[in-house]
Length: 538
Image: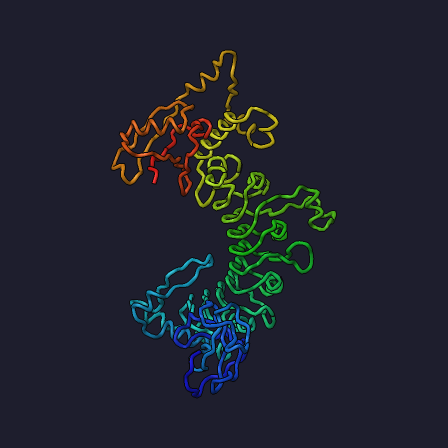
């Protein structure tokens, strides 16, 4: 509790957003205004967004408000918090006042994907005079300046008539009518970032924002029910970013699936709480949707309904019998979920135009957790051109598919099991002209496989191994991991070092540990020209 003597200070109301007078990044919500037993004068109870305060809204056993957590609340005098400033005042502070080098170094904005991006202050150095004339500004960053109001009517449009991009991240805005007032004065405004403003769930007073093409609402507390109301005011929206809003359900208002959003190309729902793929299917009729970002949710399976199920899902209308789902989706980001079954990988082939897929940080794509390596993912995904952010070249695809077929042939011999577990196996085997290799009388064919030599490059990477040039060796495909460790000790004269082997996969961010000493190069699907890293046991 900050006990300063009461002086003339602003009046506050419950629900108002405020920031610390000394730190516009320390933002909270007024939860109580009035006296506190045992303390003179009027106090303001604030629930701070960061959760770094003193109590939960109660003092000496008396509750004055309920804070969001045990230590996110505090009581302060009115003069030590600020109700914020207008957009025009923020423009003046950011672009017409001198700043210290330290202040400039600390200035950054959050991009649509929540990355920290440094801001070079417009109006500095050679272009200071030119861009200090507001009418020439086309982009402005007013992040964390305490903006709480549009200001006097017409001021914004007169001052910055050519503004196309406006970043209002981390301010005190909450009412949609204020957003509407700002946008109505900026007819050229195409991109608006309202991230880290706690927006009201009551969407009223919002006019048609006909020019807005990109809207960023990360960490604003908004839910899909509000998005359904917002869409009527966003006829031209192309990108909608909704990260970090604890969204768990998609709730269409007028049918079983989301309607409208005719111009939407990118929908970002990363870092939310969606667990069921059925919720995602409700987005499947957004006709122009090309990119769907679902990283860091709680999804554990993916499926693409068959025609009968689609017919039921879309309401059973005759006109929808042949309707497809996600007809224009090209990019689907699923990193950091809980997907662990191969069926969820194989079903991605059913999406008509899907070529850019992220599956990293899922159990199914993590060999360390029993998942499959990159080359198997590429072989199973027929159309993928970008996997986990890395381009799949024609050569990598060919090598991966051949390696995958040989891996399956070495491990499985039951045609029915192969067909069930590896749906692309027969297609790839025929496409690449790979012949069956069956053991014959006397094991002649098995001997032929065993005598096949692979060109393998070995690289020492252990900290105490010293600088040793890589070696390329011809090794039998039946060489086991245990045998290769022994050979490595001999090739590189590794005395008193216990080697640990990793397969370096093209396009994979991390090498794959080879920890089963009984498995052979053939069992692991390791092909010609592969690189194996030799590290040391810690």
